[in-house]
Amino acid sequence: GGAGGDCGAVARAAYEGARTALAETPDRLDVLRQAGVVDAGGRGLVTVLAALVESLTGETPRGATARGPGPHTRPEASPTAAAPCADDDAASRPGGPAFEVIYLLEAEDAAVARLRERLDTLGDSLVVVGGDGLWNVHVHVDDAGAAVEAGVEAGRPYRIRITHFGAGDAHAPGAERTIAERVQRAVVAVVPGEGLAGLYAEAGATAVLARPGEPPASGELVQAVRRAHAREVVLLPNDAELRHTAAAAAEQVRAEGVRVALIPTRSAVQGIAALAVHEPERRFDEDVVAMTSAAGATRYAEVTVAERQSWTMAGICQAGDVLGLVDGDVAVIGQDLTETALAVLDRMLAAGGELVTLVVGDDAPESVADRLEARVREGYLAVDTVVHHGGRQGSVLLIGVE
Image 1 (tube, helix red, strand yellow):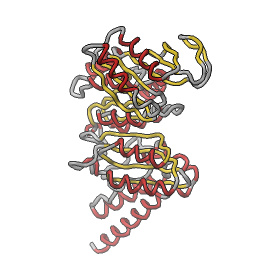
Image 2 (cartoon, helix red, strand yellow):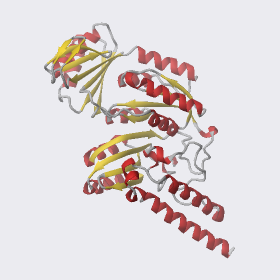
Image 3 (tube, one colour):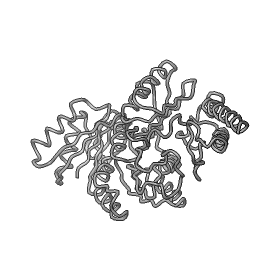
Image 4 (spheres, one colour):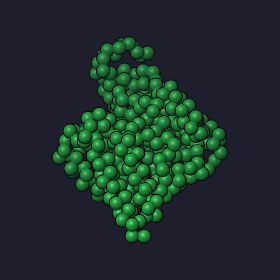
C-alpha cells in the first residue's frame, strides 16, 4: 500500500514534468515553433504517463482524460494539438464555455502578455505557447468573436478554428472515443472572415477560417471534421475553388466511417441560407436536400476592388476599379463602392427575392449597409434585409438574395 502510494506520487510527478516540458517543445525546436505544434513523440509519452498514473492511483491526472488517443489523433498534423489543455473537460461541465477557439498568432511578446490577460477574463483552458513572434493560442470561451478580436488586436491571427461544443462532445471527462458517443450530425464550413466564423459557430457549425490567398488544404478540413466528432457531417466549402479540396477531404473521412454530404456552396451567403434550414433531428438525406435547395435558391454577389487591369464579362477594368460580381461573374464595373453595390443589388432584385443578406467587410464604408437597406425598404416592398459584419473577409461586401 505504502509502496503503491510512493509509486503513484512518482508517476504523477513524472506526468506533470513531462506535461510542462511538452508545452515548451515549440520553444526548443524552430520547426515546431514555425508549425505551431508540440512534439508528437512527447505528446505520446505524456499520454503513457497519464495512463500509468491512472493505473497506480485510480485517478485521472489533471489535464488528461480517461481515454487513450483516438484512432486518428495526429498532434503533428494540426494546430489543435498545440498543447495539452489544462482543463480539457471544462467545456462539458454544466454552464461551461460553448466554444473552443484556436489560432496561430504573429505578435510581439508584450502584445501576447496583454492577450493572455484578456483571454483569461473571457474563458478558461487557456494555453499560449511559442516565441520569437509566433504563438499558438487555445482557449474555451462563450464569446468566440471576442477571442478572435483579442488576437487581431495583439497581432495577426491565422488558421483560426472555432468549434462549438455540442452534447456528447469528445471533450467529456472520462469519455471513451467511440462511435456511440459521437454527436449525430455536424456542419463543417469554410468561411472568409472572423465575423462570419463567429456567426457560423453560434449556429452550431465548426468554422474553418480561410484568409485571402490562404485557402485551407484538404487536411485542415479533415481535421475539422474529426473535431466535430459526429457520425454524419455536412460540408460547406462556400467557394467554387474549394470544391475539389472539400471533395478530397470528404473521401478521406468517409474511409474513416463518417457519413459526409458535400453541398457545393460557392459563397458564404449560400452557406448561411443552408444553415438557416438545417435541422439535425431530421433524416440525414432530407436535411441535406433542404440545405442544398436553400443554398441553390440563393443568388450571391461580391463587391471588391480590382488589383490589376484585366478583361471581364463587363469589359476591361483598371486597377482600383470597383467590381460587382453576380454569381461569380463580373457584372458591374464602377468607381464608387456604394454606387456599384447599389447597382449590383438592383440587378439581383430585378429577378425577385424575399430576403437580402449583407455581409460587410472591414474595408467597407460605414454607410454602405445603411444605403443598401434604405434602397431595399424604398424600392422593394416585402423584402427583408439582414446585416452581418464579416471582418477581414477579402471582399468589401457579400450580398445574398433568397
